Amino acid sequence: MIGQTEVAARPMEAALYLVATPIGNLGDITLRALETLAGADILACEDTRVTRILLERYGIRQRPTPYHEHNAAEAGPRLIEALETGQSVALVSDAGTPLVSDPGYRLVGQALEKGIRVVPIPGASAVLAALTASGLPSDAFLFAGFLPVKDGQRRTRLSELTAIPATLIFFESPRRLADTLVAMADVYGDRHAAIGRELTKRFEEMRTGNLAALAAHYAEAPTPKGEIVICVGPPEEQAVTGPEDIDRLLLSLAREMPASKAAAEAARMTGGQKPALYRRLLELREGTGD
Image (cartoon, rainbow, N blue to C red; front, side):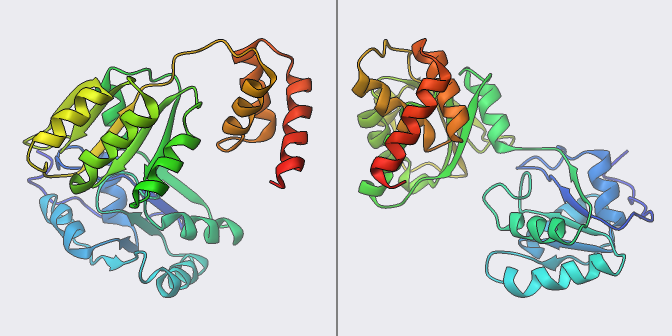
């Protein structure tokens, strides 16, 4: 049975492998991921102590090397040099899919600039786990990462996302959850939302309701433990008729997507013509200096 026998190392093609690891339950690991962790010449990770727990669970004889936010400037070039000399490098985060809220994207960019092959090894993701269990629309979603710590900046960021026609997904610290939900209720009104906590772990919890009810619950409840994912449902489509409404919609959409796509989305929402909306967006950007 896997987990009770040692995973054999096999020779691998020189490439940068982005390996998704479990977000809690160590059983949520793919066979391909295990083979990659065992076979790579170099295993780079955020925290060697965390990664060793996974390696020991599956009998993988690897010595991980640290690659994280604080040493990326020094460790990154060394990894690129190893790749250029024909070695294989596997990159993992502490949990979930690499590059999601970690500095791995810099390494990927450096590898692509050098013509080095980058291979994704998909698997666990807290974003998708929360979305699929939230009961909210999943046909379109936006992962917005962590919000600013300061309340004013947090509310500004939330306001920028108001018109996005998709489920919004955030990571949040347990100690800031209550304050963030208050801000969300103020900015987004009575939208439905879901809070995912300790996903895939023993005390996994999904709590759903409108933002005001969730804010009230966590204001009274003890500070939760574990990692938090917040999913907020999309806005209800409202009639956009006046020129000022359309301008606001265009600018809001353009903050999160290219101008052409923003114009197309605005056309879908308003019934307007994409070329005209695109020209108007360019005019607005010239007027604001964006």
